[in-house]
Image (cartoon, rainbow, N blue to C red):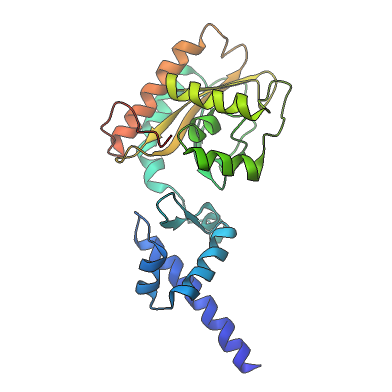
Length: 263
């Protein structure tokens, strides 16, 4: 019994050591780098990494590097994923709400879903039924489309395989070919629109936020009723959302005019 407890204890200690090692390197670590830092066999590190990734405590990007996942939020009230991003975006989000009179959200892509990491309510009486930490489909939301539009073809296919294209309203895009076309349109115009696709009577306009390497790190969007975000005003609202997204991107070190897509 004592031997089994020792083995379990060692596994837990290694998992925690891996989380701490990844937390110390914001740019992420590969399996090999983690194995060397924690001083455990690469095979053991691989097993633990797969488990932590599957449970959402780590996420792996297209380069094979691991970073902390959003499930870390559940470990404690004081843990804030994307603190730097939220801090950099805060003033621009408030300014956007003031300019548009709409509710604004900041979202990141996590395990194939858009997750709200910040929200600023509109000054009006109508409030959006959303909250920080809420997970949303990418095919039916503006922020989701803005995040998915810059994934590689293989990443989009993996997302579709794992999550599908669930129908939220009669307007939700549920055909793969139409969704792919929609992502192309987002990249071309620089913004995405949820035209009552997630909730009837509500629209959202969103734009991607890039980091210093031209990668999409988040998306910012404003939401309101179909009357507040009518078809005539979408273009004007989109311009303001894109401007806010670009200002935040500049804060994160982005210097390009257009992101380099991996398509």
